Length: 312
Image (tube, rainbow, N blue to C red):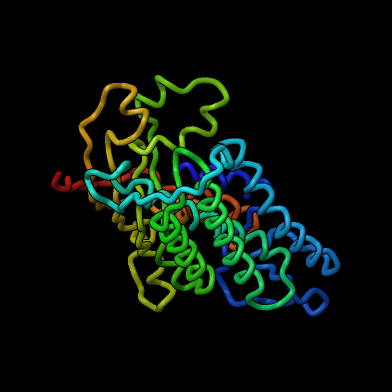
């Protein structure tokens, strides 16, 4: 889950834009521009320049950040890691694996929105966002291979690429995107609050595994897009299934919590992106689409839920 930090770097080099909802509406003078998905129009002369600048800056940023934060290169001997998956006796009970999946899902989708401003041909944004997200995942594992703490993990890489694949499919098929999403909920744990102070809190929360629930959401609002008339209130509802762990993280152990537990989760929550639409006369406006962005990646706990503890 430490890899989620990389999202911060990618956000700094990209533009926030809402994912594709409708068919591409091309401007004959600017064939890459689609007013339904882009916040502003980038001149056709600068689109390819921006595309290659973004593409070129991602690998060195990843490398520089990895050397600084994850101590890449501290070991001169390559090291392989066999971390397992979701077993009780793994280091993080699988929370790191779903964390990898979610992180790279977000990376791909954010890169897609950035490249969407910079593409000139159909599917170009999708090709670049998918490729660069995969490169980021591979670079992270190659960097980890030269550390004493981690090592190259095929398990992590598989989770990374699964997240990229899900993001790519939802960007490619807006109808599917109207039904499905991957999100998290997060509440800082006692161990994290007790042991992290100052500027480090801005980054280290990503390692606070016990505070996260990783969710797959089914949005009932999508039913309208396939011609099913549903009561208006149902468009605010989403059904959630997920996974989380407790007492696996370093912060838990710092507070002497060692009762490791894994849980399956299901619940009902409010689709706040739909609520946001009600505050705007035009739900396709730039302001409305910007306001929905946080709820594409985060679920506010807001309904009944049930957790099933897995056998130890």
